[in-house]
Image (cartoon, rainbow, N blue to C red; front, side, top):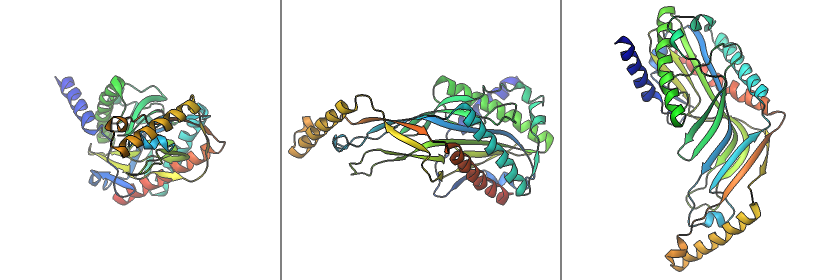
Amino acid sequence: MVKAVRAALALTLALALAAPAIAADGPLKLHDTGAIKGVQTVTVGAFNVGFIFQSLDTSKATGGLIGAFGGATDAKSILVGVTPEMMQAIADAAYADFRAQLTTHGFTVAEPASLFVRPEFARVKPMTAPYDAGVRLDKHSTGKASYYKPTALSVQFMLPGDIVASGMSGMGQAMAAGTTLYSVAQFAKSSGEAVLDVTYLIDFSELKRPGAFSFGGLQVNSGVAVVEDYSKLSVVTAAGKTAAITIGQPVAVEGDFATKQDTTKGAGFQKAANIASGVLSGLGTLGGMGGLGGMKFGNSKTFTFTARPDYSTGAIKAASLANGRLIDELATLR
């Protein structure tokens, strides 16, 4: 009976917290942060750095004119040249910086080893590291990402709301996250240490969407940023309560960290078709011919981004800036 209640509680928590926070009008969005008051000793139990290596962005075509003027109505972006060793090194550097900034702000940082050997945590099924997931980025975008944990952490886990994974694997991940939250809360209560759970999602491209009457289509440029809404700090306090500080605006680092190439297959034929369909659609709209006006072929593009040698430097800098933003707020709320 107790196990059934716990399972139901875990599922309820997972479903309640699985949706990402909506971006605030400021750099951060706060959730139940009153629970953070008085927090002094912390354990960084989870620190997951996700790397988007493929994304698909869509924009509704307007009468085919976006295609006619050469703008993309859907853009697939692919990142190449970032090796597993690079991603691991970025995660390790970001984690070390996070712990250092916690100490600088006066927090007592405990070692996480005691968390993973607790009887409560023994019931948690560790994630396979690195964790690969299809993620929903917003209503226009989906992506594929790999989440790396620091080498210093022996176990990789996530709490509810850390990611929004798609498909059946997403449902399983959400349920596992709820069970993990219960175990982490029990550890926090028994140890008196607040457990910190950090999730960052790093994007390699900057997307600009058209305005209501823009013919520019989707514009995709290179860049490195910790994205909003899907990057956050969760705090499970000694009282068993969970607070969250979510990045509400991208933490971006300026620089040209990747070279972009249009790798659309059959680009010449596609461009001619887009122009033809756009002109016909435009003529139909202007001339009152509804049949032609309904032809909205759009314009599909594929962009391949090849990471430059300083990609890692940019990603580590973005993570460090995100660390500072979150820890400054954590210290203020304490």
